[in-house]
Figure 1 (cartoon, rainbow, N blue to C red):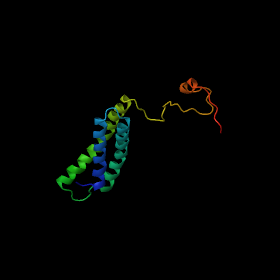
Figure 2 (figure 1 turned 90 degrees about the vertical axis):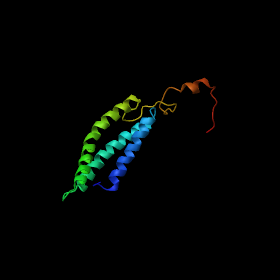
Figure 3 (figure 1 turned 180 degrees about the vertical axis):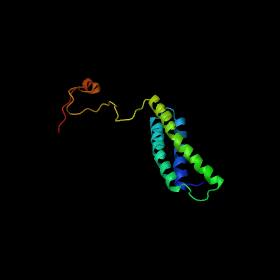
Figure 4 (figure 1 turned 45 degrees about the vertical axis):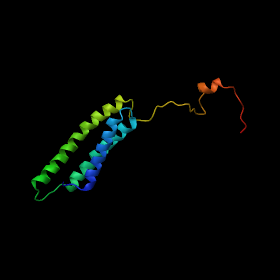
Length: 125
């Protein structure tokens, strides 16, 4: 292989995250980490290929290894599109969370439903 160990470690880590994301069909965390990792490895692959591409007397094995790394880097954006579609199907989206919990700010005029059902007991502060 032409590229250093960091190239292999980053891609094998993403492979492991991909297996986890496929195995855990209901986990949004798994697919989110896989999508984020794919995006990061696109940039890392570009850096590895541009820095460590052999420029002098390359053997057939090194040329094949570099060619497969380039093909992998070109196909990763397509993989990102498919993984993003899976991400959306699992009910996740990119952006700030819109989770509505029982927490309310001080400015909120309404009380949560579970607090209205209880008797009002004054608390000493």
